[in-house]
Length: 158
Length: 390
Image (cartoon, rainbow over all chains, first blue to last red; front, side, top):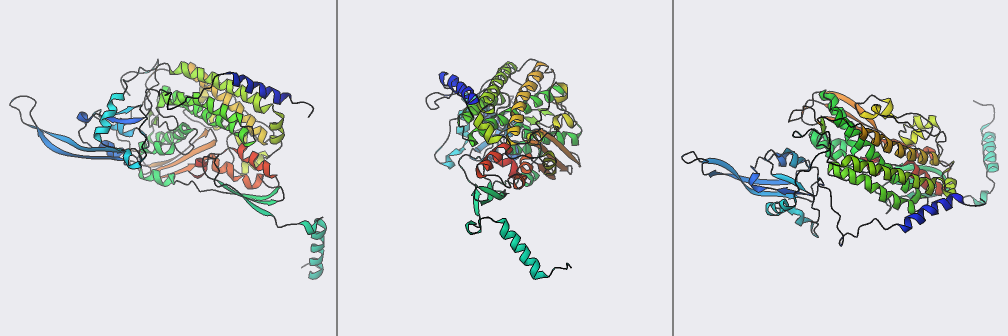
């Protein structure tokens, strides 16, 4: 090999890249904003839940634990019959098992579960990844509004 | 029976053998060298038992199964919507492409077809996952040969594509975006324009890799003529994807098999290389990445409007029957043989993954190569460990 023009060309690329600023984000100090749709954490809107257990049954690794009880609620109109409603006692999601597939959010018929793009909830102990319903309810603050769709999309129906 | 007495025959054979060895007193038994199973640079575990004679490999045998997760059995106890979230994890670098053949097989059994917009978006994301997957190979091949810069560029530019996949599907690596009969939801606003600029970055990355590695003399010396696989051997071992096309076989399921996806709607080209060596495999993959960016651009230009979901019952029960659908995934032919008995979940699923066949050629191709070339060949065959063992 008399000379190395190919090597020199490659070094030119390296030199050009060297002069550009770094693209990495220094995570704990600088935070990256995840997209609106990012599946970060599942938030629970407790008052919408009717303990129908659809999410717990559809979960592919069965990491949702639900308990509830029936109770009487005051009638809607005065003079009406008291209603039977289901009250939620326990709603736990074990994030150490969760695969972040989003099936529970999709099957929920009463819009009680939402995706939030929050992602900072790592724990030193694996048992702490079991979020109870109070903790899941706190995530509701981070749930974004549904974003507008690309041109040509049919609005309304999923 | 031969006329030559047996002792004479034996003496002749021993004499021949002694003549063949020039340095009988220096000869050793050979050495067994384990490559793997664990290495910090691999994302997975694969062990290759090589038998060495000095610097030369006498035999090499891949030992697979360290990462066997039993997907074929796992999907039997899951419903059809739950299966896609599992099979995302087979080839984890191009996960979206794993979902498509399974969904197509289920759709074929249910005799429904997704609307055109869904098929086009599927094809776009399929090609984007191909780019995300092969981009990493383009850098990784460099790092295996000692050029560490390339892999950082690959990680940098793969991120643009992954960000777009995440913006549309919600998952960087595990999209779980495909549904029987269509897609989960439509694209967010501004996605098309952003994806086009990401494709520009991919093209720039390909140019960079071309100057950085393809024209590099050291790279050429290390890769040219190393691990040559002739086309008939490649076919008999069941290679597929870029490994087969680098051997000069013009075979691409995107073009050759009838499928409802939108590849037939756009103008593109199947790249082949006649050499069949490691360099050819790199070259074909580089051209394929460019071609994929070209396909994505064209598809985004002509994206039809309309619904993205066909009429599908709420509870999905797939009628009894059998279906085989395979597509050209980033690594090669990936197919699902789905047997349904009319239940909520499949009765049996056979998953054909490309890496398993691509790695099976190792005993053939590694015979007689030198130890540093083992790494070149392994890198150029390009397998994902999860795709081998599934």
